[in-house]
Amino acid sequence: MSTDTEAAVAAPALAQPWIWMYHAVSDPTDDPYGITVAPERLDHHLRWLRARGLRGVSMAELLNAHSAGRGASLVGLTFDDGYADFVDAALPVLARHDCTATLFVLPGRLGGSNDWDPEGPRRPLLTARRIRAAAAAGTEIASHGLLHRDLTGCSDDVLHEETFRSRELLHDLTGTAPAGFCYPYGTFDRRAADAVRRAGYAYACAIAPGAAAGPYALPRTHISQADRGARLWAKRLRHRARRLPALEPVLIGGHAG
Image 1 (cartoon, rainbow, N blue to C red):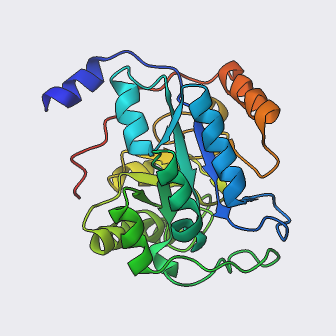
Image 2: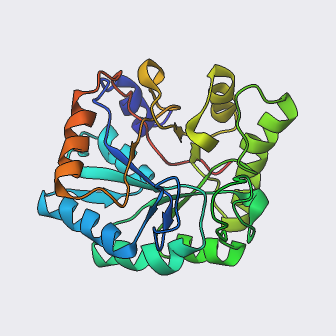
């Protein structure tokens, strides 16, 4: 066991870090689910953080700092689904504010679209080349499963594809095995969480896991186009008021697969 790992195991549990959840960054007018923010609103959100001495960072940076007791001024920024607009619309805004982020992508749908959603507007997904460009720009690339399937109640074969196989494909694509996983639809059960852990991921993000919160079920706050100063303050207070289990230290590194 390495010194860093020994320190993490010996360290006390810590309060849950604040993690923001985004999806698409584009025109939000044609969005029945409220998961799209305009680039200008993302800019407003990041300025709001910086004005309060906070900075948005990737999950890897957040969890490492959190484990070392240096995470109080950091907020995790996550973008689900791997929409094509991330590179052109989100990355320039993140760079402007010296922020990083974690992008949860679907290696089984590279260059495809969000056709798991039969009712919402069609949105293109990033190609392999654009995912590598995002990684080169400092974005943490992590897995959102293979094809965006609900992992609760699925077959063993599907569970293996969504966890193990998606990690292998992202390793091939970027040269680095992803440390993080995000449950499609935010839903999970013990069997899914165990599969994610066995696949070699260091952490997994959910949405509102309640008492099940932990390294493989990290809670997140949905951030929308409607969120401005007062609403962001309310969400920050709500996060602080949640009675969540303390998070055991998590170190990201050495996950080469």
